[in-house]
Image 1 (cartoon, rainbow, N blue to C red):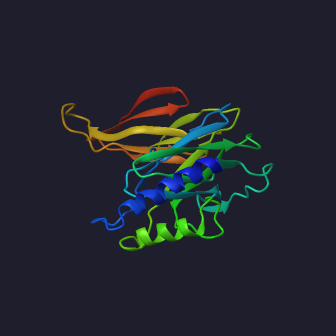
Image 2 (tube, rainbow, N blue to C red):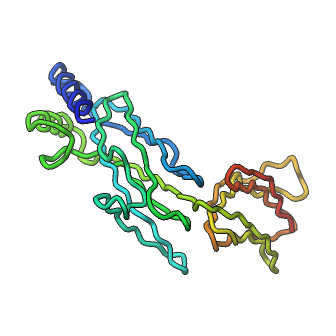
Image 3 (cartoon, one colour):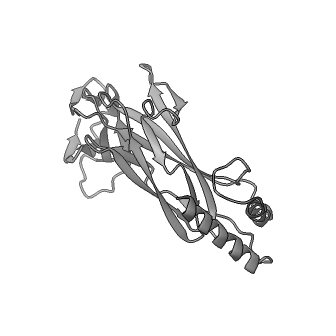
Length: 252
Protein backbone atom coordinates (compact mmCIF):
# COMPACT_ATOMS: atom_id res chain seq x y z
CA UNK A 1 0.00 0.00 0.00
CA UNK A 2 2.81 2.44 0.85
CA UNK A 3 4.40 1.76 -2.55
CA UNK A 4 1.11 2.63 -4.26
CA UNK A 5 0.75 5.81 -2.22
CA UNK A 6 4.31 6.85 -3.00
CA UNK A 7 3.85 6.22 -6.72
CA UNK A 8 0.63 8.22 -6.78
CA UNK A 9 2.24 11.04 -4.84
CA UNK A 10 5.15 11.21 -7.28
CA UNK A 11 2.73 11.26 -10.24
CA UNK A 12 0.82 14.06 -8.56
CA UNK A 13 3.98 16.12 -8.07
CA UNK A 14 5.06 15.60 -11.68
CA UNK A 15 1.62 16.69 -12.94
CA UNK A 16 1.71 19.84 -10.86
CA UNK A 17 5.24 20.64 -12.01
CA UNK A 18 4.19 20.28 -15.64
CA UNK A 19 1.44 22.90 -15.31
CA UNK A 20 2.36 25.35 -12.56
CA UNK A 21 0.32 28.21 -14.07
CA UNK A 22 -3.01 26.52 -14.72
CA UNK A 23 -5.82 28.96 -15.38
CA UNK A 24 -8.22 27.17 -13.02
CA UNK A 25 -7.32 26.53 -9.39
CA UNK A 26 -6.85 22.83 -8.74
CA UNK A 27 -9.19 21.12 -6.32
CA UNK A 28 -10.25 17.56 -5.48
CA UNK A 29 -13.92 16.62 -5.61
CA UNK A 30 -14.74 13.30 -4.01
CA UNK A 31 -17.84 11.12 -4.23
CA UNK A 32 -18.57 8.09 -2.05
CA UNK A 33 -21.75 6.70 -3.60
CA UNK A 34 -24.65 5.55 -1.40
CA UNK A 35 -25.09 7.36 1.91
CA UNK A 36 -26.30 4.16 3.64
CA UNK A 37 -24.50 0.83 3.76
CA UNK A 38 -25.71 -2.42 5.32
CA UNK A 39 -23.69 -5.30 6.75
CA UNK A 40 -26.13 -8.19 6.50
CA UNK A 41 -25.91 -11.18 8.87
CA UNK A 42 -22.82 -13.22 8.10
CA UNK A 43 -21.28 -10.42 6.01
CA UNK A 44 -18.01 -9.25 7.54
CA UNK A 45 -16.79 -6.66 5.03
CA UNK A 46 -18.11 -3.85 2.84
CA UNK A 47 -16.20 -2.40 -0.11
CA UNK A 48 -16.51 1.38 -0.39
CA UNK A 49 -15.20 3.16 -3.48
CA UNK A 50 -14.10 6.78 -3.35
CA UNK A 51 -14.09 8.63 -6.67
CA UNK A 52 -12.34 11.92 -7.35
CA UNK A 53 -13.81 13.93 -10.23
CA UNK A 54 -11.72 16.99 -9.46
CA UNK A 55 -8.50 18.15 -11.11
CA UNK A 56 -6.22 17.63 -8.10
CA UNK A 57 -5.22 14.58 -6.10
CA UNK A 58 -7.34 13.94 -2.99
CA UNK A 59 -5.72 12.87 0.26
CA UNK A 60 -8.57 11.23 2.16
CA UNK A 61 -8.68 10.28 5.82
CA UNK A 62 -11.35 7.78 6.96
CA UNK A 63 -12.85 8.54 10.38
CA UNK A 64 -15.27 6.15 12.11
CA UNK A 65 -17.58 6.78 15.07
CA UNK A 66 -20.08 4.43 16.65
CA UNK A 67 -23.57 5.91 16.97
CA UNK A 68 -25.31 4.86 20.16
CA UNK A 69 -29.02 5.55 20.65
CA UNK A 70 -30.73 6.16 23.97
CA UNK A 71 -34.28 5.07 24.82
CA UNK A 72 -35.57 8.61 24.20
CA UNK A 73 -34.23 8.62 20.66
CA UNK A 74 -31.23 10.83 21.35
CA UNK A 75 -27.81 9.62 20.29
CA UNK A 76 -24.12 10.18 20.76
CA UNK A 77 -21.15 9.45 18.53
CA UNK A 78 -18.13 7.73 20.05
CA UNK A 79 -14.90 7.59 17.99
CA UNK A 80 -13.81 4.02 17.30
CA UNK A 81 -10.48 3.11 18.84
CA UNK A 82 -8.87 1.27 15.95
CA UNK A 83 -5.70 0.71 17.97
CA UNK A 84 -7.48 -2.05 19.89
CA UNK A 85 -8.76 -4.44 17.23
CA UNK A 86 -10.58 -6.59 19.78
CA UNK A 87 -12.83 -3.66 20.73
CA UNK A 88 -13.31 -1.97 17.37
CA UNK A 89 -16.66 -2.83 15.84
CA UNK A 90 -15.88 -1.34 12.43
CA UNK A 91 -12.48 -0.51 10.96
CA UNK A 92 -11.38 0.82 7.58
CA UNK A 93 -8.53 -0.77 5.66
CA UNK A 94 -6.83 1.36 4.50
CA UNK A 95 -7.84 4.31 6.67
CA UNK A 96 -5.93 6.79 4.48
CA UNK A 97 -6.14 6.96 0.72
CA UNK A 98 -4.53 8.90 -2.10
CA UNK A 99 -7.13 9.29 -4.86
CA UNK A 100 -5.71 10.74 -8.10
CA UNK A 101 -7.64 13.30 -10.12
CA UNK A 102 -10.29 11.58 -12.28
CA UNK A 103 -9.49 8.31 -10.50
CA UNK A 104 -10.75 6.15 -7.68
CA UNK A 105 -9.57 4.09 -4.73
CA UNK A 106 -11.38 1.66 -2.44
CA UNK A 107 -11.35 0.85 1.24
CA UNK A 108 -12.81 -2.14 3.04
CA UNK A 109 -15.01 -1.59 6.07
CA UNK A 110 -14.38 -4.62 8.27
CA UNK A 111 -16.93 -5.67 10.89
CA UNK A 112 -15.33 -6.99 14.09
CA UNK A 113 -16.47 -7.96 17.55
CA UNK A 114 -19.87 -8.83 18.99
CA UNK A 115 -22.90 -8.97 16.68
CA UNK A 116 -25.56 -10.12 19.12
CA UNK A 117 -27.34 -6.78 18.69
CA UNK A 118 -27.52 -4.22 15.91
CA UNK A 119 -24.83 -1.52 15.79
CA UNK A 120 -24.52 1.77 13.91
CA UNK A 121 -21.54 3.69 12.61
CA UNK A 122 -20.83 7.03 10.96
CA UNK A 123 -17.98 6.77 8.47
CA UNK A 124 -16.57 10.08 7.28
CA UNK A 125 -14.37 10.43 4.21
CA UNK A 126 -12.49 13.67 4.79
CA UNK A 127 -10.12 15.25 2.24
CA UNK A 128 -7.19 16.78 4.10
CA UNK A 129 -4.08 18.83 3.50
CA UNK A 130 -1.25 16.44 4.35
CA UNK A 131 0.64 17.30 7.52
CA UNK A 132 4.11 16.19 8.51
CA UNK A 133 2.71 13.63 10.96
CA UNK A 134 0.31 12.07 8.46
CA UNK A 135 0.99 8.62 7.05
CA UNK A 136 0.58 9.44 3.36
CA UNK A 137 4.19 8.54 2.51
CA UNK A 138 4.98 12.03 1.20
CA UNK A 139 8.20 13.96 1.37
CA UNK A 140 8.25 17.49 2.74
CA UNK A 141 8.69 18.83 -0.81
CA UNK A 142 5.66 16.91 -2.08
CA UNK A 143 3.52 18.19 0.77
CA UNK A 144 4.59 21.77 0.14
CA UNK A 145 3.90 21.51 -3.60
CA UNK A 146 0.42 20.14 -2.95
CA UNK A 147 -0.48 22.84 -0.44
CA UNK A 148 0.71 25.57 -2.82
CA UNK A 149 -1.34 24.10 -5.67
CA UNK A 150 -4.53 24.22 -3.59
CA UNK A 151 -3.91 27.46 -1.73
CA UNK A 152 -4.98 29.58 -4.71
CA UNK A 153 -8.64 28.60 -4.56
CA UNK A 154 -9.40 26.06 -1.84
CA UNK A 155 -9.79 26.87 1.82
CA UNK A 156 -12.24 24.15 2.83
CA UNK A 157 -12.19 20.59 1.50
CA UNK A 158 -15.61 18.93 1.50
CA UNK A 159 -16.02 15.49 3.03
CA UNK A 160 -18.93 13.04 3.12
CA UNK A 161 -20.47 10.91 5.83
CA UNK A 162 -21.84 7.41 5.30
CA UNK A 163 -24.14 5.68 7.78
CA UNK A 164 -23.39 1.97 8.24
CA UNK A 165 -25.93 -0.38 9.80
CA UNK A 166 -24.45 -3.66 11.08
CA UNK A 167 -27.29 -6.15 11.40
CA UNK A 168 -27.07 -8.77 14.17
CA UNK A 169 -26.12 -12.32 13.24
CA UNK A 170 -29.54 -13.56 14.35
CA UNK A 171 -31.73 -10.96 12.66
CA UNK A 172 -35.42 -11.08 13.54
CA UNK A 173 -37.95 -9.05 11.55
CA UNK A 174 -41.30 -8.12 13.07
CA UNK A 175 -43.13 -5.02 11.77
CA UNK A 176 -46.51 -4.54 13.42
CA UNK A 177 -49.33 -2.32 12.15
CA UNK A 178 -51.33 -0.46 14.78
CA UNK A 179 -54.30 1.85 14.21
CA UNK A 180 -55.21 4.69 16.55
CA UNK A 181 -57.85 7.41 16.26
CA UNK A 182 -55.82 9.73 14.05
CA UNK A 183 -52.91 7.60 12.85
CA UNK A 184 -51.84 4.30 11.36
CA UNK A 185 -48.43 3.40 12.68
CA UNK A 186 -45.77 0.84 11.90
CA UNK A 187 -43.81 -0.42 14.90
CA UNK A 188 -40.58 -2.35 14.58
CA UNK A 189 -40.83 -5.08 17.21
CA UNK A 190 -37.85 -6.96 15.78
CA UNK A 191 -34.16 -6.65 16.62
CA UNK A 192 -32.89 -5.13 13.38
CA UNK A 193 -33.58 -2.10 11.19
CA UNK A 194 -36.31 -2.30 8.57
CA UNK A 195 -36.36 -0.05 5.51
CA UNK A 196 -39.60 1.67 4.55
CA UNK A 197 -38.96 2.42 0.91
CA UNK A 198 -40.79 4.40 -1.77
CA UNK A 199 -43.10 5.95 0.86
CA UNK A 200 -45.68 8.26 -0.74
CA UNK A 201 -49.08 9.74 -0.03
CA UNK A 202 -51.70 9.24 -2.75
CA UNK A 203 -55.28 10.16 -3.39
CA UNK A 204 -57.76 7.59 -2.04
CA UNK A 205 -60.38 8.39 -4.69
CA UNK A 206 -58.36 9.11 -7.82
CA UNK A 207 -55.79 6.41 -8.62
CA UNK A 208 -54.54 8.38 -11.62
CA UNK A 209 -53.65 11.43 -9.53
CA UNK A 210 -50.00 12.13 -8.89
CA UNK A 211 -48.70 10.98 -5.51
CA UNK A 212 -46.41 12.96 -3.25
CA UNK A 213 -42.62 12.71 -3.76
CA UNK A 214 -41.22 9.45 -2.43
CA UNK A 215 -39.14 9.22 0.72
CA UNK A 216 -37.15 6.54 2.51
CA UNK A 217 -37.36 5.76 6.23
CA UNK A 218 -35.03 3.60 8.31
CA UNK A 219 -37.15 2.12 11.09
CA UNK A 220 -34.82 1.09 13.90
CA UNK A 221 -35.76 -1.59 16.47
CA UNK A 222 -38.37 -0.41 19.00
CA UNK A 223 -39.13 2.64 16.85
CA UNK A 224 -42.52 3.68 15.48
CA UNK A 225 -43.42 5.60 12.32
CA UNK A 226 -46.81 7.28 12.30
CA UNK A 227 -48.94 8.09 9.23
CA UNK A 228 -51.99 10.39 9.53
CA UNK A 229 -55.37 8.84 8.78
CA UNK A 230 -57.50 10.68 6.24
CA UNK A 231 -60.51 9.80 4.10
CA UNK A 232 -58.88 11.63 1.19
CA UNK A 233 -55.48 9.95 1.24
CA UNK A 234 -53.74 6.59 1.45
CA UNK A 235 -50.08 5.78 1.98
CA UNK A 236 -48.22 3.39 -0.29
CA UNK A 237 -44.81 1.97 0.56
CA UNK A 238 -42.57 -1.06 0.47
CA UNK A 239 -41.27 -2.80 3.58
CA UNK A 240 -37.76 -4.16 3.04
CA UNK A 241 -36.66 -6.86 5.48
CA UNK A 242 -33.27 -8.15 4.42
CA UNK A 243 -33.76 -9.66 0.95
CA UNK A 244 -37.56 -9.56 1.27
CA UNK A 245 -39.56 -6.67 -0.17
CA UNK A 246 -43.35 -6.35 0.02
CA UNK A 247 -45.85 -3.69 -1.06
CA UNK A 248 -48.02 -2.18 1.67
CA UNK A 249 -51.11 0.01 1.45
CA UNK A 250 -52.12 1.98 4.55
CA UNK A 251 -55.73 3.08 4.09
CA UNK A 252 -58.10 5.01 6.42
